[in-house]
Length: 136
Image 1 (cartoon, rainbow, N blue to C red):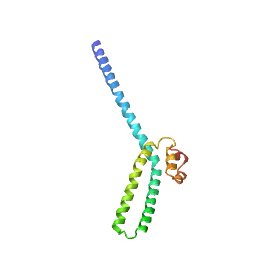
Image 2: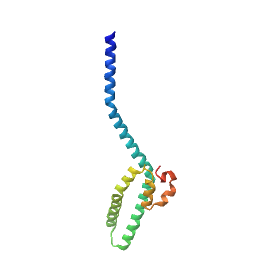
Image 3: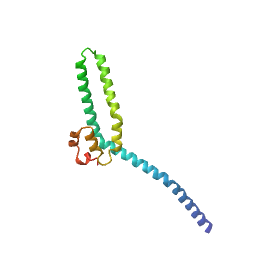
Image 4: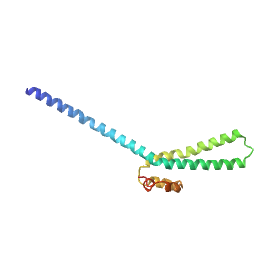
């Protein structure tokens, strides 16, 4: 009977040691998932701003294209399409890194308000609740 108890205690102690070895892995997994959640939350907070910024950028591209085509009426339709596609692609390239960074940081206090002001989209802040504008 005593040997059974001893074996049971040994098995239990071994199980506890094995579980303790797994604690750092579980903690790392939790930390990783918390990071992913913060990124996801930031993307949700940034989405209205990003949509408005992209709409504004596309409007500015359209205005610039119209001005260019007015100055160069000799361009055929194919040339106009190529130029328009290149301008839109350039706009997206220029905005790609800043928008990714805003998504990453949007969960931090004040980031969205700063981004709105930085890009001159103050009217977007009026559409956001005060908490969203502060990035809460």
